[in-house]
Image (tube, rainbow, N blue to C red; front, top):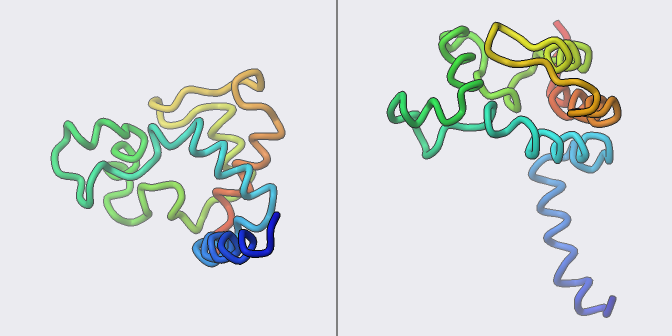
Length: 128
C-alpha cells in the first residue's frame, strides 16, 4: 500500500475501533458479523428513530417481543444488554426462547460462530 493511501485509510480503522473498542478482538468482530447475518433481522433496532407503529415494530419481532416482556426493565435490543453471558446466548440459540425464537442447530449456526456470537453479545457484560 502506498504511504498516502495508508494515511487516508488509517483514520477509518481508528474511528471504527473507537466506536466499539471490543471490535478489535477478532472473536468479537466475528460475533458481530454473525449477529448481523443471523440475528439482526429479529433482534435489531426498530426502523427509524422511534418504534412508530406496531406494524413497523413487527419487522423486528424479537426486539418487539422483548420490549413487551421487559417493559423497559431491560433493553429490548440484545446489543445493548449488559446481563448476557456467552452461556446464556448459547442456550437461547440452541434451545430457542419464549415460544417465539426457534432453536438453531449446529448446521445453521456453527459452534465456532455461536462462540463468537456469545463473545459479541457478552462484550458489555457487567458482573453483579
